[in-house]
Image 1: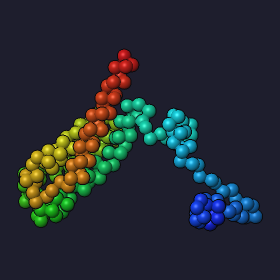
Image 2: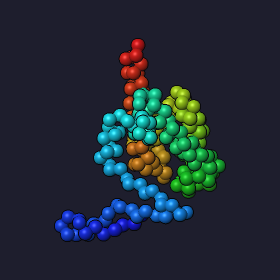
Image 3: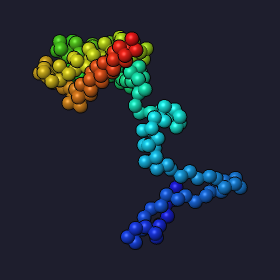
Image 4: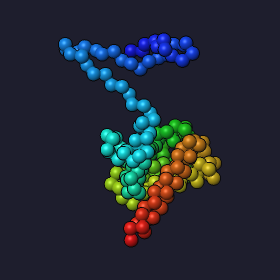
Length: 194
């Protein structure tokens, strides 16, 4: 992309132009694309053409089932990664073990052992349920997120010296709120169709 000075700019100042010179490739002139204005994209999306007609998916789910599918598609890899991240803690070599400066799982406090096992086992199980689109994934998210919210907000002393950072607790609150909202939407759609 080449930026040219545009002497016609307002106020006599030089401004960047988005015009692109034609480039010759293999003896032929190549086409240059002019980017669409952001207003036209917004108008197209707002008009409902984001369902594939304009060539791209909409940011807004078509229905509750689509919203749940998208939610699960995002959380599945995250819960799998979270679970796999805590597996080494079962052997005394993960992030919780490092935060507590211990060399074995047995040295962790009981609440930390429970949280570590919940993630090490529950994370992959939850991810499997999320990937499959089953209630198992939703229950796993609810259990793990609730445990982290309660421990992070109400009982941080139980897991000291390890901590649950505020962004993690906030993300888990968003996870539960999103799941509840999507399930309520799904229930409303089912009632409307009956």
